[in-house]
Length: 274
Ligand SMILES: NC(=O)c1ccc[n+]([C@@H]2O[C@H](COP(=O)([O-])OP(=O)(O)OC[C@H]3O[C@@H](n4cnc5c(N)ncnc54)[C@H](OP(=O)(O)O)[C@@H]3O)[C@@H](O)[C@H]2O)c1
Image 1 (cartoon, rainbow, N blue to C red):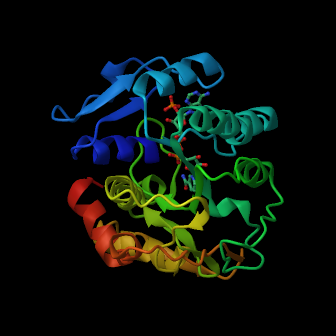
Image 2 (image 1 turned 90 degrees about the vertical axis):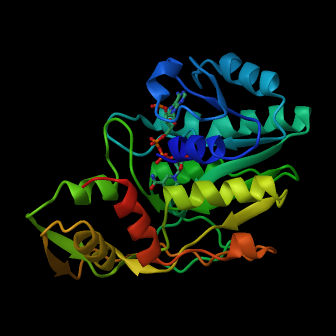
């Protein structure tokens, strides 16, 4: 979901950019103007294919969007191999090549029992996904772990909230009034990362990139209205979870100024069919 938006955002600007994909490059068509160069057939379990791509690109900045989410088909071994071991190995290569490394982490490193969370709060996820992601956060002068959450359009089999909501047209669903998030949309995060790279604003450490707080109920209401879905959303008091992140301070207005939910949803509405 995020990698695809980064390809779009970096393809729109004048930065020499490379992307790795598992599939043949023909599967990524869509922007004929894109200035992205692809390394296809790159499989994280064949680490040589990934390290070769990083070395050949001579990248100044490497952004890792490879990750696996918790699902029935992902074993705990795969979660830790991809979400924890892989970023450590990429970090080692980046250190050798003097590249900055931006690793995409998640609000899921937190349980949601004690939100909102600051960037120095200790991860306390009880589940293997959150624990594997927390394990993939690296402390090193060349590494930025960016904790965030997002919704947005997906390629292939969609599993996220945005696609799920669009699929609920005219249905009656529950909206969680006590589940809170500071997610952003994936296109907004992708452009934020472009600005960070373009303006050379890399900072090491573990930072929170957080949007305006919203409940899942309110978010569904906004999508319902914007896409005219005609969904009946019944407010549900349970479950309760507060994974809001308190946004880290970024010393540049282009990074600290983030759009409202109405602006983000309007952008989705303008660009994606329900
Ligand atoms: N989605 C969210 O709400 C969310 C929230 C916070 C943080 N994050 C983090 O953001 C990152 C991106 O998540 P996403 O939602 O964009 O996930 P996604 O849509 O599932 O994308 C994950 C990407 O990783 C690639 N990948 C997985 N295993 C691989 C392997 N063995 N070799 C090569 N590539 C592999 C997938 O390639 P294929 O396309 O070939 O499968 C896909 O491009 C992850 O680190 C995730 O933890 C996600």
